[in-house]
Image (cartoon, rainbow, N blue to C red; front, side, top):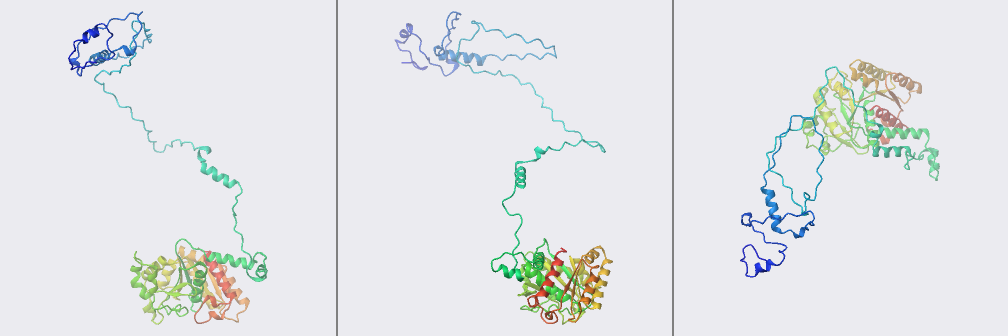
Length: 463
């Protein structure tokens, strides 16, 4: 039975230790002051074999640790002032006398010394700014291998090889004429040149542009066809391009746009819209709120903002600020605005309309006075300012045959005269549905519908 540090020795314990080997592990006192002084260890001769680690007692290991802890720190020798570096001494060869015989690893003990102040590493040097007027050499551009990424290499491979997808959209077979009749029996014939031209015009008027567009229909002469042009252009753009088209009667002298279109469930005009313009421009306004002021055309899918023709001209006259307010409301809720104008080119309403226009349409008939009034208007706008001159040069002339007895030579004389004044000229044949009364695109002759489709496509190509 092993004895503890606080147990008394038994009578036979000393005798038992006198003739036997010491125990493998002796009791270790809890505190270093209570430990008895250990007898000096006998020196080992070189011939004696090294004692294995399990022969060392715990007391001996504790004694070695105490000696290491209580050992005074080694003084740090001062650093000589840049002496010549001596050759490195040869390390002494360990002899059996000096070689350690204990194989138990000992923990390294760091002496407690006062740490010398260390200097912070030097800050990285920034390049000095170049002097004024001195050009610094530019860094070389990255090589091609550094620019090409895996994604770009993959895209390059896709471009180089033939894609399995169709790059060109196939054209639909013919639907009209003899070719369309044959296709109904199972053939697949391409459309004719006339049918293909009509499809191209349909595609042009079906486009939606970023931001609203404003078309101004003008001529300084009354009866030149401004109102029919406004109505039928609005109908074509709404039929093929969808809703969001507004026809606006900006006429202070008894505008007839409301007389030739369908009436809604009310009789309100732009004069009732003006007091509500600020509310409609607010964040809480909705597109459905415009139904209180607009007259929707259910067949043609566009809206009409009327004037009040029963009132005198000075009662219908609005200021340029009012034109700005109405246009702001229209541009917020509509993608395309077609404005029917009056005959007074000096009126502030008329001039403000030109300032908001993106495309100018000169409406005229084959009559000489109507054609001359439109030509004079183009020439006057070219001298007004740079923006008006650009509108005049990019304008579209729509020549309507108002007289059924007009010859082809008379129509060609007017159209050829406008080719040097406008970007494009479109001729509209005579149609009885355009003479008087409510005007609807669907009631026109097929030839007249095709002509108005060409006129709308000419306007769309100017955006």
